[in-house]
Length: 124
Image 1 (cartoon, rainbow, N blue to C red):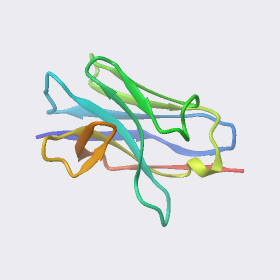
Image 2 (image 1 turned 120 degrees about the vertical axis):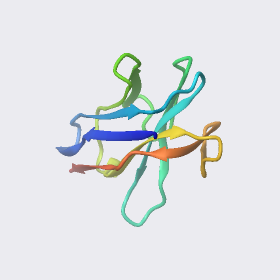
Image 3 (image 1 turned 135 degrees about the vertical axis):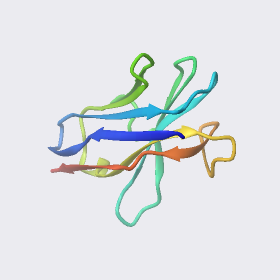
Image 4 (image 1 turned 180 degrees about the horizontal axis):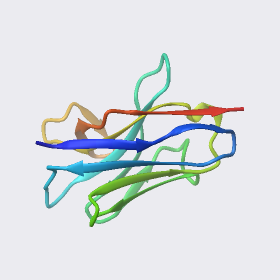
């Protein structure tokens, strides 16, 4: 059984930083994608960043240069370091893992496992 358990997030002022974590269990694939998505109130969920087995990363244009996705394979944990946060970064953030039959397609990966979500609020 695959589980993604998120931690981190919270409230910060514009220009501040936050780090999100996502501990994975039961997810054993030799080739994979992991990612972060977010959803602002009244908007559709959007992709933020992905990382694959080789450590290759991809970012949405809106976060490029400010956010960094990384993973600690020994701890089975995915991270999203968010710097220079802006009010428009506010939303619910979700970590995700790929699934062959996943319903969400972004940057070459099909995502089907999701974390529980964590709120990020950036005030101006």
